[in-house]
Image 1 (cartoon, rainbow, N blue to C red):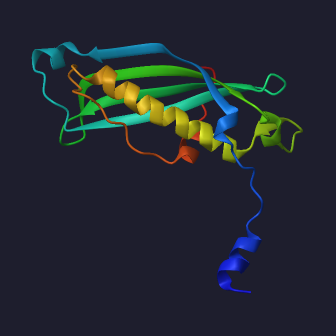
Image 2 (image 1 turned 180 degrees about the vertical axis):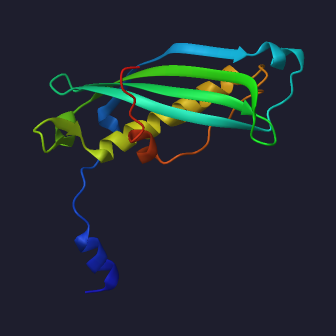
Length: 166
């Protein structure tokens, strides 16, 4: 057996995501805020860099085959030394999906609770973050941020960025 076939034989079967069985029901910006300090407004300067923080919360309706997700994005303008300029923005976007066969992606945890399989979770995070990248760019154009292009991230990093109670 070739090394390539041997390596393929040791990879566990992962559930396959079929995009034709996924539907985005709704995308809503539920919070959007841009703030500038008085000091910044008195002497505005273009950001040398923008610090980006993100997180999410999610819920799953297994029987209804639906998921909802809140994606949080915070921006802070920095000077060339990495110091805050006094310009910030924060956004919260909510996504609702229907996924036929969602139960195929159920993963039982040690405590008996069901969680969504990482393959599906990462797929959803990738869809949401790429959508939000465009939305944030559009919302920051014409502001002191002058259009922020969010970085490309690994969807798994977003999956791990759970936020409690927000």
